[in-house]
Image (cartoon, rainbow, N blue to C red; front, top):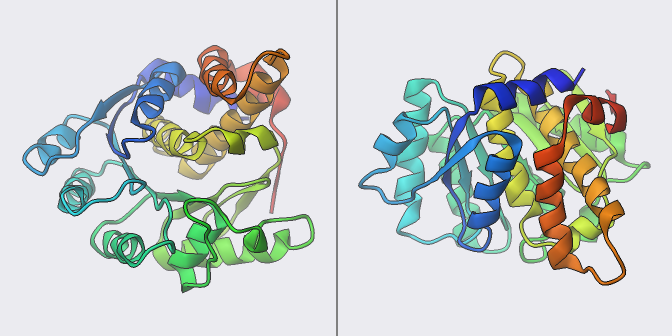
Length: 273
């Protein structure tokens, strides 16, 4: 089922505008190129409306938030809404500081997002202020497990219904949900948490998949999350005894570059709830 969403990205080569953080901006650009899309990075208020106007979608990431870029995020988001372009929000570290949390809330008030992707602590912070984030990482107390997955799925569906967006909660078990349906995804490898920016890259990847599959956004997001997890597994299998997390991060991008629809369908592990 998932291969057509990957193939649409390869065929349509979606151009994605990214207002993202300076820690992972290069990796986000490279993963968009690897999946078949194309990136533009622009965060100045003087040009973001013009830039987002020539793109197919927008990815907003608050990972290295500053007061200069907040107005640019809102301008670009509103312009994308006006044009009917998909918009993705990555609320990195929401709950870690009042600026991050209040900015995420403001963005959600001002911009209609098609997808909000974050870890469980970030999403819980946006939903009801109960997330217990540790910096930009989820707190173990919030983690999704086999024991609590039904309650987390119900939470994700309820939040998706409230904000009229797709909610993607990523971690050891990933949940991609709208108001009616959720994909529980079991791909990935623990070593992915040792590489800075895999979540940021995934948000960029999600944007490309949604732009290329506008009529099946929920499934497109699920396909992107599965693709990232599958490539995390493939990259781990490639490691030698001399490789570390730096090599692993590059191997993930290489795996995205070489991923085909048949491999994605064969290796994707998910169930629908």
